[in-house]
Image 1 (cartoon, helix red, strand yellow):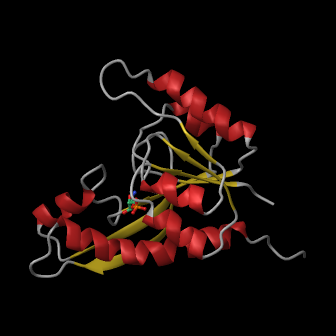
Image 2 (cartoon, helix red, strand yellow):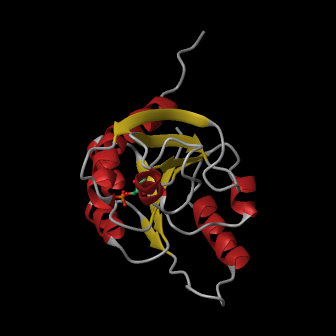
Image 3 (cartoon, helix red, strand yellow):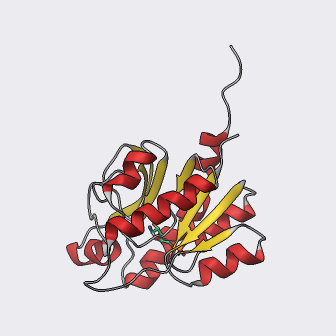
Length: 187
Ligand code: GRF
């Protein structure tokens, strides 16, 4: 049985949806104290917070090795990033190649990066959405597994649009992960 870890940094509403969908989450890992951590703890999931330093003294390579170590000690085999905000060093993607999923609030390859929803609004697109993909060391790149479109409505701001995207994400991400965790029937 694959062992699933979910890295979080923020509100944890996708994590909450995964828990509601009864995904077998073995570990939640966070780079800061956040609502996601509270959700994980109250669901009784093993939770590790590795607080990161913000600013120039941040040693990305060292921090990444600490993250890899925690995941290895928990024998994690599949990682589903859910709003995790630290960009990890390439060694993370080497250790878990093709076993890291990410979800991004745009229709990739459009609007990569931290401000995907704002950038989509500013570009004036009428349709944006969400993408689930294999994460690689290149930000918001990697094989696309699933996408779903979300209409931009008149009067939308970043919060209203992002929340409508997240409504889709909270259904789609658990569905895709469940699918990936389901073993193929024997021949
Ligand atoms: C989601 O919109 C996801 O696409 C992005 O971060 C957000 C996480 O939301 N990568 P939450 O913290 O789970 O509410």
